[in-house]
Image 1 (tube, rainbow, N blue to C red):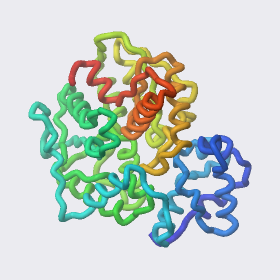
Image 2 (cartoon, one colour):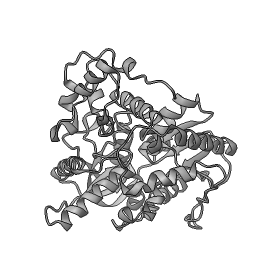
Image 3 (spheres, rainbow, N blue to C red):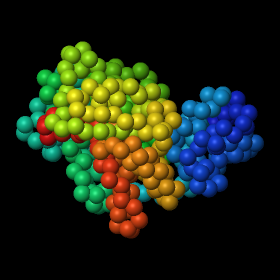
Image 4 (cartoon, helix red, strand yellow):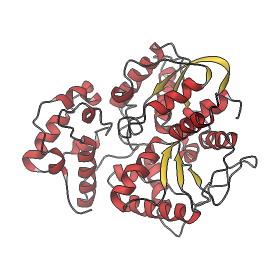
Length: 380
């Protein structure tokens, strides 16, 4: 990487403080994007507070100078890692970053087909590829699996829905982690290895379109791969966008088997950073029997789940999650729907923790977007 580009990103900052006013973390302590920016502009040295930032871009969305604060944070993290500076310990005992590092070595070949049931229809070559991501590995980590959720159902639901639409997607046997967390933890070496292995594997299948059910994976392929490695030889799309487009082209109407009210949580990566707001909502509204209710903070102003790249799962992040769950509960919805696996993990984790501590019980159920639709259609 070599060069810290933070000054170029921040040079138009005139210290109005609006970023801090909108920053979720500023509600719970002395974290201030404005002060981090001021200090950097004075001495060009990254603060240790760069590791606390959620990179949610709520500050950027409301910045009058359109400064992309998450890009500044990423630049600082990459530079800090190059210099060997100390960074905070990752949550979950570094389990997920270890998996990524294992996958980044070409000699180790993943066997990702072991959990695919025989009734799933998929192919080895074709036009459409579904990138499953790391969600199935959530089942192997004791804390996440302790939530009594089967995370392999996420990808199964997507493939069953694609099969429902008469599509047999490519599923890579040697698919690697996309590298999102490695990049945002400042580990460019691991990120680059993963990216080049994934790009090469996808190109060998001849796929023209790659679908993602993970907001972070989609962002990584849509923004970060082209930014660092040049234009891709295939198109990428999120599953909500693909499903919305396909349904509108076919004229199909999805029907639920009971009346349900839902609210939708915009993940930071898919919403603010990729501007995908309408597609998931349009699909949910397309389901006969489903009523969509909006939370107070939605779309560009949606609240963050409180954690990024498995960093800083602390009291501040839990407070943010609690506020968001209360927002969802206040809508009176049966389900909180999200298109980010980590958001679901973090919301479910807090729900269980609050019940265990006898503090509060949220009745609303958290569901993955694809899982919710597949269940509504009795496909899983």
